Length: 439
Ligand SMILES: *[C@@H]1O[C@H](CO)[C@@H](O)[C@H](O)[C@H]1NC(C)=O
Ligand SMILES: *[C@@H]1O[C@H](CO)[C@@H](O)[C@H](O)[C@H]1NC(C)=O
Ligand SMILES: *[C@@H]1O[C@H](CO)[C@@H](O)[C@H](O)[C@H]1NC(C)=O
Ligand SMILES: *[C@@H]1O[C@H](CO)[C@@H](O)[C@H](O)[C@H]1NC(C)=O
Ligand SMILES: *[C@@H]1O[C@H](CO)[C@@H](O)[C@H](O)[C@H]1NC(C)=O
Ligand SMILES: *[C@@H]1O[C@H](CO)[C@@H](O)[C@H](O)[C@H]1NC(C)=O
Image 1 (tube, protein in one colour):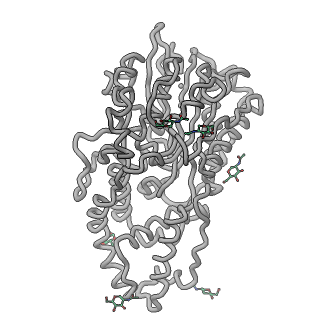
Image 2 (cartoon, rainbow, N blue to C red):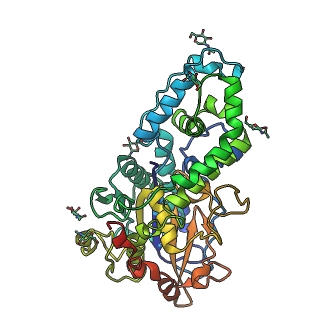
Image 3 (cartoon, helix red, strand yellow):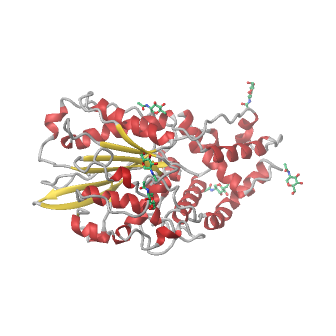
């Protein structure tokens, strides 16, 4: 139902003061407009949150070299979700007698959002990400070491990829102009989309439990404010989602945002957190396995060796140096949020000690959709060479992952071999679970 992400795999050398040589020839002009909604609220918009750095990017330790995936930028509702939202709005508009002034705008309101596509704000986010990545990783670029860029075939993801390459070129003053080289079809073998596991379940059972809990006070509000609208739990979630969707589409605060308070947005965030956890994450038996093909491609790039995978990879593409080169310093892949969740879970990132409760959010959880997969989310794997040894570190939206799974040190570094060893789930092709996708 929802959309997308970006993975950047970077290899390269960081020297002590390389920025100076580039400073004169880098142009960085942010193009993402401000939305006018307070950040504490935007950050509760779960997977509809516009990208924000979850932490400050930590410079690699001195003497280390670098390797990167990204979600598409902000989009319209999907066609099916948009139709549902529209029907919810019609239910409210059928009420003629609003009891609170905050609902009066509905008399004149027309639902006019597009569907599925990237919105201009989302294109700007991707463009700015391209600029940022050029500036951050410019040492890794040379005329014959341009980023190798792939995307899954959905138009919004393709547009994110090409806006990213445009931003990258712009920041380099058109000295370096990477292109989108491979588009993986969502109706074929595709490591950047979760469309190839027909038997995977959904998280509806779990999200429905929480939805009934968090929408209860809202039912009380709407019954009093718009008597007779008869909103369901899903209708209420649809109205909340309209706040981020309209805001990113119109680039000004949606009046739907004014109907809800921080507590409601916190409930909405958890609703989406559960949807991701039980839909594609650790709570879904066939969730993590959908990320296996990507992880095996990542290992191939990190170790400069052919892809070994029996799951979602396209063997024809992955065995050709034209469509799966192993000699680049930056690899950028563009995908969707659900697939990104499957990839995190295949890798072992963000694994909670217990499955998420359907009734009681843990306020200290790290499984937050707004930090895992906001619009333009970024999973970055950096390969570093320090003292002639190879290491790996992973950042999600600039937040350094502790990598306990491979014995990460205080800088989040794991030796490359230890990282590869830790990826037994992917290397065993999901330990038999892939076949269950088609049982
Ligand atoms: C609705 O639109 C009419 C005509 O454009 C305008 O006079 C009226 O003030 C609007 N009502 C609200 C609640 O915005
Ligand atoms: C950026 O994305 C928009 C869609 O929002 C698309 O129309 C446009 O062609 C893209 N620009 C580039 C340079 O790819
Ligand atoms: C593999 O990729 C090629 C080239 O894009 C495509 O023609 C083919 O249909 C793909 N096969 C599968 C099974 O994904
Ligand atoms: C937030 O809104 C809900 C629903 O209208 C209401 O029950 C609750 O008291 C509000 N919370 C605060 C802190 O204002
Ligand atoms: C709402 O539900 C009540 C009771 O079930 C019903 O009488 C009424 O017609 C419904 N209203 C609408 C707008 O569907
Ligand atoms: C697509 O994936 C299936 C399942 O792993 C595999 O049997 C098939 O060979 C793959 N096709 C290509 C072209 O890679």
